[in-house]
Image (cartoon, rainbow, N blue to C red; front, side):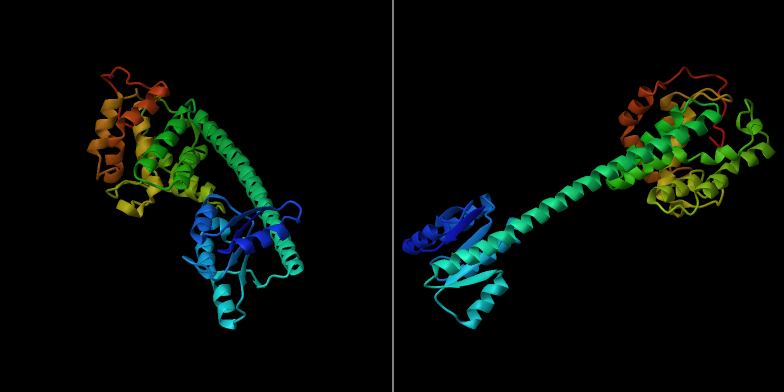
Amino acid sequence: MDAVLIDDSRAILAVLTRELETLDGLSIRSFTDPEEAVAACTCQPFDLVIVDYNMPKLTGVQVIRALRQMPDYAMVPIVMVTSQNEAALRLEALQAGATDFLLKPVDALELKVRVTNLLTLRRSQLALAQRADDLADAVREKTAELALREEEIIWRLARAIEYRDGATGDHVSRVARLSRLLAEAIGLPKEVCRMIYLAAPLHDIGKIGIPDSVLCKAGALDAQERALMCTHVTIGERILADGSSDLLQFCERIAAGHHEKWNGEGYPRGLRGEATPLEARIVALADVFDALCSDRPYKSGWPLEKARDFVAEQAGQHFDPRLVEAFLQNWSSVRAIMEEAGTASPPLSAAHSSLREAS
């Protein structure tokens, strides 16, 4: 344990030091200049401070106030030594943050007993703080483990849905990464960006309720089949409804709103503008862009630049203009995500079909 003694009298410092050096495990540093002492305390967290009241430059009360403003000294025991026993002075010192008092001339036995008790208190404080740090570390570790498990479950479920749709699972991975990129680009908090990244892969979870004859059809859908395909949104919303966790609630909003359009011409509710949750608007853009670029049984993938131009043209129509701006400003990152997944621009097919509404 480390103690600092502050008194403008060298004689008193010598007496205090001599008495306290008899205590086991206590290292002592003394100062006659209170300003130098305060400066030293900013560099070293002492476990005990003993300070005289009547000193030049700074009084003992002023020293206490200065120390209590430092985070490391919020709980450190501080003893004020004074020859005055006035109630007003004691009250002022207590208000400043003094822990205890000693009257001059200091009784050696009283000094050692009080210091021993205060050091015991300090050790308890440090032990409690260490215990709290250990518990916090354990909680962070377990939370990280749960987050990894949560993420793993989501990805496995999302990939299962993709395989049923006849895809390889890469679509949900790219949509998740593109969605996180857009979320970060518009300045959303880190945890929100993570939620969107994890929730995005389940945007089409409702497709498990669509018959294979419609979901896996190689040709164009007729009006009845298209209407049936569109129900994957409400199916997904019902599957994810009433979730107790923030992540499941993100998943529900994304599943329910990723086919809404900025101009109100989307489905299932025809929501306009910001009435669609932001996370759903983000995934809507990422989903459509990746679907345009991807080969499907019913169409060939578009070149990246052609899909980019389509997104730009749809600002204020299909997509949130702010998100389109972020998408275009971060085009190099978007392209990198697509090319890493092996979807660099393929040759433009003369007979490419339009994007299926329920991509």
